Image 1 (spheres, rainbow, N blue to C red):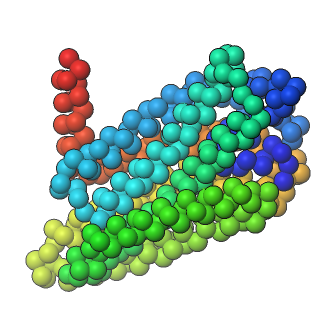
Image 2: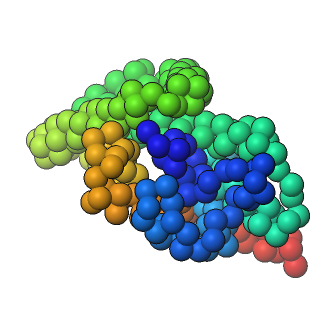
Length: 321
């Protein structure tokens, strides 16, 4: 793995050559050739900063709304809250790194190689944790919706608040631990292979659940309606559809990045692969857009959450006046 692709988790470090001793700062000249010999598509750092700040505010509002409204204190919304926190990791890392680069570019911040390495490691861990936790919580929400639909009468005994909290703790602990190990052994291609494999397995797992859910949903809905529980069924299917949208957006936004990782493994020196690598900044914009779009999906699909968000924004506006 070459130096330009070594830090495949961090947001923009792949596009900058670090050489503090020779006074080469973080900011690369627009259109500068990267280590592959192909000009990177450059995107203004201000755009990264703006998208990062907007997505950060959105996800903070989602988390605050779920905490504020007791009607949203259910396992599914706990998992959605954690998904929002995962998106916040992307937003925070992007904002911090972009500010760091802008300050360095304008000579307002002097950096050493050690500082740079520490920042790089922290951002890598945050991004990797976001990927692993997002995929894990998407799978968790899929399993939760599956239980809601097919074990509706036993749902509250199966998915208790205690079990939901235990699942959340395990996911975060696993995500942070695995991310730290990935960064320690970042020079090994096995790390990339593990991430790509995890991405594929989670998609297969979720697809299998979806297939079963949507094939049998019609039959199951008739049984539920016979028990006068049609409203619960409709709510459960609405949650499943919301998750379908979330997963679809995740695949669209993160897919190019994971394809980038796959190409690093199979054809790092191929000219066509190098051409694909040159679009890396566009993949980063897509990743940030995922964090930006998710809160809009939550609000659009959940009337209760949308109502709480409106109240919070209105109260904030009144307070500001």
